[in-house]
Length: 173
Image (cartoon, rainbow, N blue to C red):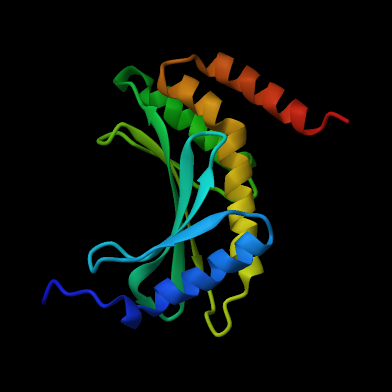
């Protein structure tokens, strides 16, 4: 396999570019990054509130139907002593969200939000992508600080209390 990558022959880059334009028209700033033969082309939506980004790409080699992956790497290192509590808290969060995806890697000591979605690309309806983006935005921005506390060793009682406050804020008039 040669190291040559031809951007003009990457239909996923073009599709993601069309999605970026649709999102931008709806006041959601998004950019596309070309693939390089190893890493697929990506649509990137910044989450300035938490200093992270949602990276969306078509998973390579899956075409019947194509599958989009949404990935947000949170900027928290999970302390070894906090593995159990962080995992329990992420499970609790996922059980209450309309779109689940918080995951923890013990080996990488990291937390991500990852979601995969099969899509039709003829045509690719921007609304099918906008809905998961909005759910991910809300989940990550609402719970990032609490996840950071969990990663740093906060007790489950503190986390549940913080979760209750975050949910109460949602329903305040």
